[in-house]
Image (cartoon, rainbow, N blue to C red; front, side, top):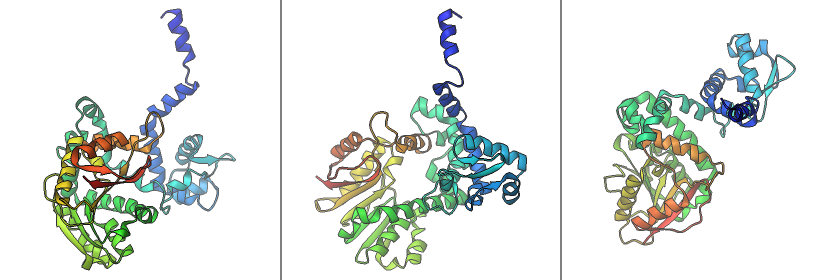
Length: 349
């Protein structure tokens, strides 16, 4: 090793800021397993009432005292929990997101990411990098949706996970989207219909059609009945990529679907919707998805973009990407979406 190389190597020490950042990234898999284990033990919930000595905390959590102390000590270094005095642990602002009763926490996301369904395909990320294809199919020999249809337990969990996020959408966004201006809505790729049921309950003058794969859309029967809106909701089974979608709606609503599509699939779906709208230029297409921030800015959507690549073969998109898609398929974007989960409102042209 030359003197120059030796000097450069000596400057890159583990306590260097950049070195520490890389160590943290390299340890990410371990840290995720640690956080998941602590979440399953309910440690964050146990500390809701205030600090606890490790002996009491371990007893309540059903954990080995020394092992729990060692794991919590490591997470305290990262600000997830806090230790002080020695052997006494308490919550931090981060801890609240791990509690199971927090409607805006990440506990469901941690469980979802820990599933074999979503974790194993990332072992084949290199395949996606080399081919641009979803690693999921290489890992399981089938597509994501086909896997769910064949594995009811995983499907039930995913339904619960999607309902968790749909509740947040309904609470935080429904009023902002002003769906009440429409008398009829077709929810395309609407899953079990939970979000649509929430909208129908909010707007009693509205009628709706739920469109999704037949085995998925059928779940809407119970959801609509539980919400008391069955008389205003029709269920239509079909594939957005190849089957005609319902005609005659004032609003075509597509939430968190296009991110699972490649550009070719997204274009096919948009052309399908445009065909069903026909000459009714008063109809509107509302897409709820994320618009990626430019450059090096932090954006959780950039991480979700990798999920879409590995699990579905889809992608998240920039504003330019969206506008190019719309221009090719007969739509024009009407609003100025923000860089986050947002509503893209389009008119047919």
